[in-house]
Each structure stands twice: as C-alpha cells, then as structure tokens.
Image (cartoon, rainbow, N blue to C red; front, top):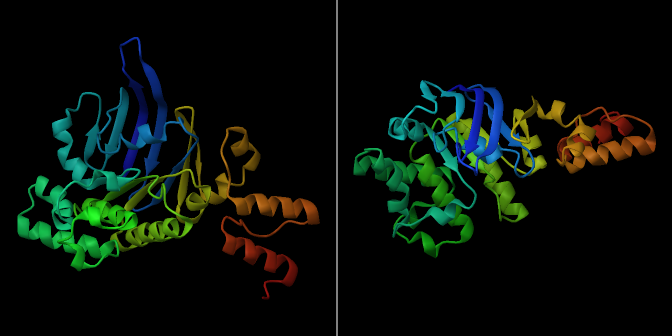
Length: 288
C-alpha cells in the first residue's frame, strides 16, 4: 500500500484559545514494501504524523492517502474501520494494552472485532504467536504471568493477527535492555521481509534507523526537514547536530579517526560491521 501525504496540517484544539499546530506543509510519499524510519527530536511531530496513518488523528488540512483509502478532515471515523485492519500500530509499551484473561483471547480480540469467525481467529492467534517467537503452550496462560518481554511480544502478536499490510512502530524497544532491543528489532526486520510489509519505524535510536531502514524522514518543528537514504542523511553530521539530533556513534568515531589520521575511510560506517570493514580496507586493503 503506497502512502501519500499532501500538504498535511494538524492543529490540536483547532478553533479554540488552546490551538497548537503540530504539523504543517507535510508532503511525503512512501512506496509499498519499504522500511522507513522517522527521526526527529521530541516535539518534532513524529508521533502526530504516525497517528494519521490509520485515522487515529485526521488532518486539519490536507489529505492522507493509504492505498485505496483517503483520510481528510471530512472523513468520519467509522468509515475508516477497514483501514485500521490494514495499518497496525505498535505503540510504546504495548504490553500495557493487554487485558484479557488468556494470551489466546488477547490475540484473538482484534480479529474477532473485525468479524473474523472464532475458529479462524484462534488459528491466526497461533500463527501470530509463532511469528513473534513464542510457543503455543502459553496460549492458555494469563498474559500477566509472562515476563515483560514476552508480554510485549504477545501484544505485538495481537496486531499481527489482523494481518496488516503496514506496520507502524512507535519506539517499540523503549525500556528494553540492549540484548532485548536487538532481538526485538531483528524480529521486526524478519517480519518485514517475510510478510513483505511496509514498515514505518519512529525511533530516537540513530543506530536502529541506520541499520534497518531503507529511507529516512527527518522531522523538525512540525514539518519534514529532509528525506533520503541513511547514507545520505547521516553524511550531514553538522546539520543534524545543529537541529538537536544525534548521529550513530560509528559515524562520529569515523569522523574523529579521519581527522586524526588525515585520511578518509572508504565506507559509510553506519554500523559497527561497516566501520570495521572500512578500517580494514583503509589499512589492510580489505585483508583481515
């Protein structure tokens, strides 16, 4: 499903003394099947933008088109229900949204709400549980008896059970340790490839944005500041730092090393692996 934003503006509490413009002049085009990361400092409009992707928020002005669906200020929320099955959003700490007495019932809730027969919903629950790397044995357990990481995977399984075409991830690794974060991000990368999803990641981790995304959207003060590949975006180190954004640690290390030795490392160095390869190529001609 292609996603197109055309001159999108969003004002919270419009036409009131408390009006606050969160987005303006947003023009975007996201091709179906791509992995996009949206980055920007707190308050730049990232979360407001993603909530337009399934009609949780509607534009004050402008148009959001997702596949065959169009979201405008005039579109009534009930007309957007089919879209919400196609666009799954994983918010921060999704485990806080668990509420059913068993894992199976929690995962089945979404499909049942969209009219899927019970037996089919249970089948989807098993499949979704497998996708997030959890065993069928926990289906009859209470989700609240599981570890925090397992609870988060159950909540994600509930979204996957609806078989979305677009998966939106809003800081999905918040609160996880480095190992848990890597496992979670690798899981999403696998799902992206396996299910041919359009994946949209909102993150403060420049390392995750650099490693996993095909394309970056940089938000700044409520609008799109810049778009491009990770290689192109993270080449502009000074500009990013000037607007309050970090860059991957490997990029900073590469820059300092180049200044020290007076030579350029022939690699983008967005990840540790790329940095090591670049140093090998510089000093050893690519030999280990």
